[in-house]
Length: 217
Image (cartoon, rainbow, N blue to C red):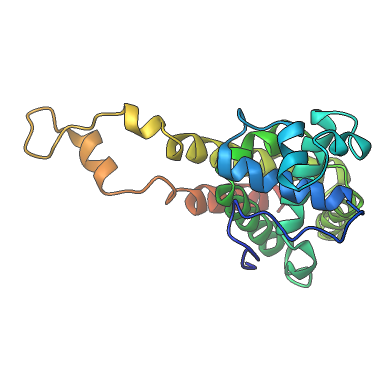
């Protein structure tokens, strides 16, 4: 897994005036969402934050939904698909992709909803999808079944990241677990104390990949 080049929430270095780019604005928008949350984000705030006219963003994105498409593409770029184990088995490739996607989303908990609610249609994303399906097809899996597998893995990974991010952003504070010395301390509470929020992802991913392998054999 590649390291995040800059801590979430830090604005990237702006391009030299007077030039802005769609890519820079998407990364800057992601940084603002990291810092202030999705509800407090606006196109005008982004324009102000990057030191341009508050309406300058509209010259590059028609509206906020289009900008959020760019944010989703920026998140996908962090996965660094070029360094995935393309020479390994399709299971190894799928596992590493899911792990990187999970880690990327959890670095940006405020932005998981953005990624989860729109398809990523950048050329890199489309090319990656084609290469992954080609990998599975070379192992005797039909294109339709390969797409079903890819969709299942994507939904599992994004759903997991969404659940964890919601919990980390405050839902856990609304939960009150009984103390070990409390009469209400039961087997469920004991099990919760012996686990972490995120330690079941790899178990679930392994089970899913094993199931797909069994079906393909």
